[in-house]
Length: 505
Image (cartoon, rainbow, N blue to C red; front, side, top):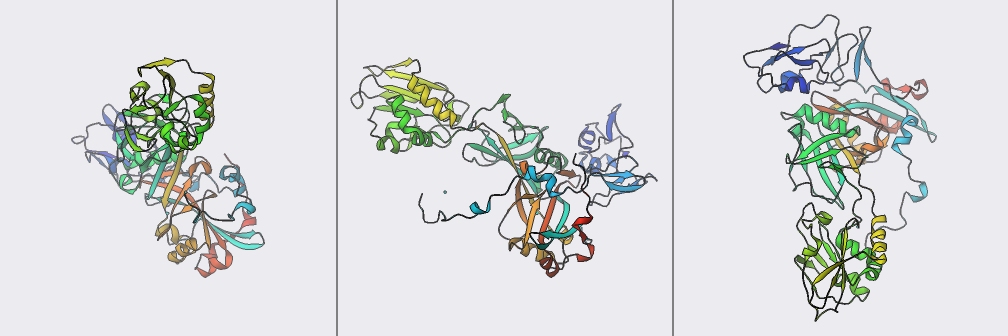
């Protein structure tokens, strides 16, 4: 690697983003060791354009043709994506294909046939991702007495995103808020979902941007279920790992809400009625619930209490609180402050008011005297019983991840000489797309866009390449006759029986 010392500022980005750790900053000057595969990552992302690729290549290096980067790999070392190595002057894939039986426990069982189709639907029920050469493995065999073909490839996908679902009622920023790692943008906050916040990480625009390598590495780590530290708006600190509880500003989240405040009132109204005369369940989003005004309260003939609130009412029994780090994801830290007045001429004297949140974690019980003044009481057995019922209905907080990819023309060309035929077969249920053996959700419309639960893909089989792109293991399975009809590479097929199972790491 050639360095223009007049331009170089020794910022260290080349060393930070080198996928092989081949670049180092020594004596304030970039230096490179024998691990360098000339992938060009440092040249591509040097902010001062101070680096230039050498034209000479080590005579003992083998050039990899697995992706457009074309790494030159020296004996005993790996390419930038860490998938291939130079062994005895031969390019060798470090891993081997895994039979489905080796990943079946990760993918999980299919539903029993008896429950694959519903007896009736909810309709009308009321109120619910170069190649001119064939793919590396095209295997034929029998399943359920049918001749089938499976075509496999590890596809580098620029169109790659990981959507993170974070179970928490703590606000993580407004929609569009910037998500960063190592002070570089990697994504943004998306919309909330029920009891969870959604972060969109990656995507082609960020992968093609100035921090593309960092984005690709982050996506791969997330998809491989590894911990990643990030920030929202450079303020809120997150440590997220798929399959583990989220850590927010150094604190590990406990339980996720069973529903918003209003929903919690609706679900637990009978037991809440026994706990206090009035029950307020603070929540954002979307609604704080009030038992006496709620439809469930009316159903149970809960008496009016005369409690007036320092909140904006949405609909009866549902109030809107501002978001924050207080109770139930609101800005309220003093629960009594939610009560404006207690109108005694409307309610009865000495009413008891329970204020809690949809996880039942925090709670306070008050009594209003004959002047409407509040006095805090110890929690009664009935209150504790209600809080326990709410808490036991809440799941533990967890980070979930969905990998979203788009399988473009080159990935499809490895399957068939007529890529459009494959697209139509996939959408027509004639070819089944899987990722590491795991089923996917196929987006409707044109192209092959899909999403897969990364927890159902064997760990450490997503990779990244300095394109930058994320490398995803893709399989297409179809009948032998349908594969022939779509112009598949039948000359490249090998029998399933000829494959030898490889030890899983």
